[in-house]
Image 1 (cartoon, rainbow, N blue to C red):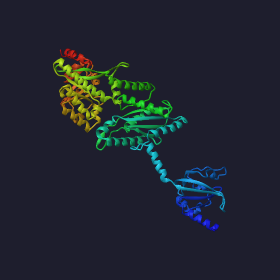
Image 2: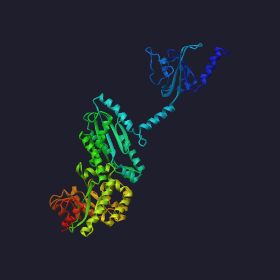
Image 3: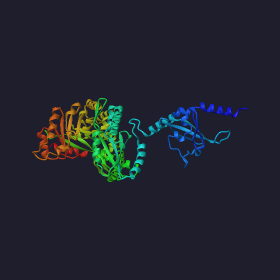
Image 4: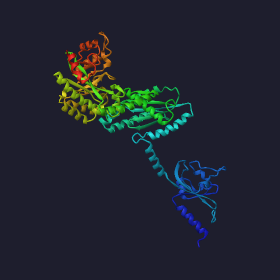
Length: 559
């Protein structure tokens, strides 16, 4: 029969060879002995731990009895995650189980504390948690972590007299970069913007990416009357400066919406909604703008949702129509073309102006449907006009950037021309000046393809935000239209409209035709004729009229 001494030696041998940390304590939690795995795990010598309280290895606060002894009896039998502190002060996560020793077989009453290193498990769990709460591209917090952060931030703000601000930033026309230059260029731009935002914010603030090209910034500890307008002006300058990516210099602009807590909401979801509404207002104002939330925006937002639903129904049920505004040759006084203008009279909303429903169509994904309908309807109408007039006219149609970026749109143009039976040279495609400023090679390729079809390219609203013709040399442009804001400044015979003069001279030097839009007075017409402007349109001649009235108006204007 095995002696007690031999049994103790066997148990000791087993404990010494186990890869787990095993610490034996007395009933008050003072260490009696440890196995070699404990010393290896924690960096202590055996003798340094013997006699010390178990709490010397704790990296977290263990519950204690009133006399200071660790409450090991309460933890007996439970398997928990815990943290040990090594001799050098670093911490290691462990899985710990505490087994009570009842004092039988000559063993003193106490506890056996068994633990093993779970660093890899903790790292894996932390990695999974990080992936679930952070954006994989920029490594910024995502929406879910932002909401959790706001919960805690609002609690802290309630305990102080300081406020906080939530700002949403959406990059303008980001989709164009992805579509024209590739997603790898767009991704690198997002990374640069994220880095700039982190550099712009203070240490205690939070920057998150909500998805796509939308970022959120939480500004903490904001004094009630802080000049946040100036702060966001700095953001526009510092964060939205041009970015060079793989040789492309990208002009970066953004639409920014902001809220202040507690004035603009009491919970994270409401604050995010109101900031989003303010950001949409910045987009509706022409983009590259900042808007702070106001209560009146809620009504506007509800109205915008209703308008989007009504427009979708209008497109399905054929509620939209086209008006045609004549364009005259200044030298001859003859009508040489018409511009097709979309019009919408809703049975429930009444007349809805284009500057309201066109942005809604853009944001709601309906602009391609609307643009294709305008193109085909106008081409068919042109045939009817020409048959009654007995001579050809040119037709100008406005094109959304989203249409221009779709290769299928070339086929749509060609098919509309062929179906209507008009000459390609009779069609003019009007594009925005901003499209040329912001985009690169793919835009040139698309315009060249249009040119190869025989279609003319017109830059609409020229001068709005830009007053240089230098960049036009890079693009195949046939005609430019001077923005009506410049024409409206011509109020008398002595007016010196320097910008108008410069546009006409430079455009002619580049071989382009010049059209002035928004002409309303004889003074404006005379000024433009004397400066050599080629064509005009505006209320002096005719507003947009229905297709059935075009022939009558054209004959009256042509004399």
